Image 1 (tube, helix red, strand yellow):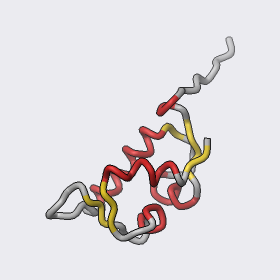
Image 2: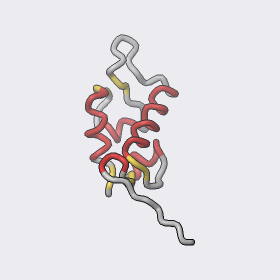
Image 3: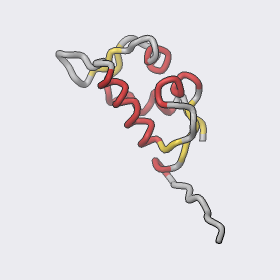
Image 4: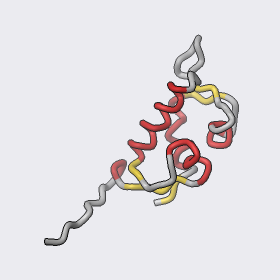
Length: 87
């Protein structure tokens, strides 16, 4: 019996990270939801949230090329991800 791999739609559809994003979350295709989870895991592990305003993410050498700035409001994270993925 042959098995078929289901492909999701919307946010669960696998997307391919580029080199910049792949340096943080890995290079294999995965859903956006998994990319966001891995980014937050990295941000928390590296203690990159501003101590005074937890909504602000402080970019390190890996996040700076992804964000294009030294600080980013967490509400803009999805936009940064969109710029670094292909379907």
